[in-house]
Amino acid sequence: MILLRTTRIDTSTRALAGDLRAASGGTVAMLVDERRGSQDAGGMPKVSVTDEACAALGLYRPADYGWRCGDYGFYLARRQYPAETHFWMIDYDVRIGGDAAAFFAACAARPEIDLLAAHVRATGRDWWWCASVASTDAEPRRCFFPVVRLSARAADVLLAKRRAHVRRPLRRLLWPNDEAFVATAVGAAGLSSADFNALGKTFYDDETFTYTEVIDADEFVPGDGPPRLHHPVLSGEDLARKRRKLVDDHGKPTPRWKRAYRRGAAAINGATRW
Image (cartoon, rainbow, N blue to C red):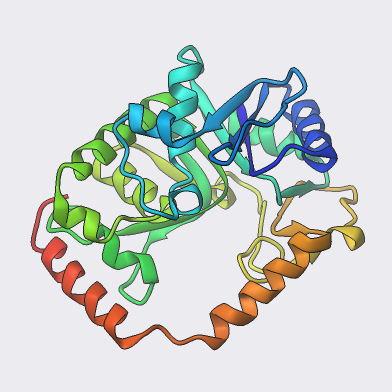
């Protein structure tokens, strides 16, 4: 099953859902943030992200969890669709150029891999989220979350670990984002992970599949040839908002108190078990 992660259901997301369904041959469900109200999926399968649904799973909900904790969508979908063996999560601003079916086929040929994503690797202390997964017994790891595939068993393991961390106040001091938590927890549990580009072909690069290099959807041409992941592909107000955010993020230094807070919390967590 593919979970198309979005904050709204509109013409663009419906079209993307159709493209993903055709390329993968599988079911596409809208994974929708509905904390501010329900949205009409027009008969498509839908997984709703709400405070009530996340609370029912025993998940901690920081103010920005809708953005920070994308992995919660996997757990909600796992409960709603228990027969599924693997779940994809694909953001609404992702596009797959070229032969998208070949991308899904290459990944489907490796069902034994619990986590498939981009930039799957160990991370150094210079990465902002590294401090949030510091411990005595787990290697801090990272991945890139616009396109992720998880096995159902990995989703179960990750949910159990999130719940365990909820009961530890020191862990809640630096609640990790999805990219740090998922990669680190998968590795700590002894589950398997792989980078998309380790499957025998180059499916992405740092020019077209990034956080910072925004692609104007009105100028994007999928093209033919081998499959290629693109992100973020945006238009209209979404495009303008993203560009403003990048300028703001670049221009605002992290306050001294916040740096000190993170160092202290990381030191405490770094002296405890994962």
